[in-house]
Picture (cartoon, rainbow, N blue to C red):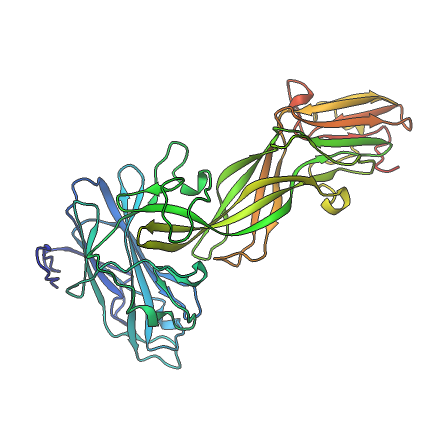
Length: 468
């Protein structure tokens, strides 16, 4: 098997190390791939090959993967799921992504190549066999780009799409979601070699791009350096595609076991550290980092006094943003099926106690006072007294907010966790009535260093009665 083109090194099946992935005698391989490394500047360890099969109504499935490929090795990739795949068209949309694992831990994408593979012998649109195999030879050049030879012919770089992100199929776009493969004959450019994209940059804080401060500095098709990660040819950026404004988010809670009050104030310079969540290839959201928004207003956000009869959540408002990953050059931006949601702004304001709802934090209000000693840090207070708690560290709320509407890229809802850093600016002013001789305030465990270390407050009284 020879890939003749100019000065490209010829590799044959007889001389290369041949390996078949998901071998089957039923159908031809989807693709045969060999990678030649002529770039002495890149310290690469090995390659990962991923073949994607695309549904005619949108979305893709990984049809084949090999994650330990060496340079010069001829890899044969098989789609074993083809036999149960429904397709109304005579061809199936496939793509192959070739990733290089670099010695410093980064991941570089060499190509994301799309094609339409003809299928024969399907029965009522189910299965069939591939009529031909796509043969790819990749040659990494010293300038950081890659030559791609497909079926013996040099294939120019597939030009980045410039249409709406909602109409993206990998590197191919279409206005007809029922038949994305009709666009695969388009999108070529005059650029003979393919640029390398750094998908997983190494940084001082994390190996995940998502874990960094999200940015809103790049508009579609408008490359910019600020806030982006650059390789030799362009920028890998997050592009804002939508917002959710003034969303109630849990940043604390107030306590009220009865015959007492609690006034919760989220002070200036208090901060809430909220998850950055990411989704790829229509999958569920997962935590990829965190981002802190501070109360930068001129005054504290103060809730009405809570009188009764249990803990209620303190919800204030934030804006949230969804970004889509794009690789931008001066020729436009290529959108990827990678998304993130993060808290882009603090809006202040408070949601009333009843709308926010009662807390489910453990251990909850109204424990028997005799059970507190040795289990929870606590303090007793006399009738008609009061105390103002100034808290250094906040509690973690695993379900601070769930965003489930109008999300791009996946059908899954996004749940975001909050850990509030009160920095001794947030207060809870407690006042106790005359119903009981003693009132008790406690937290969720044993803490040294005084009440400023308590992350959450609960209250009780001698009869352990929650109510007026």
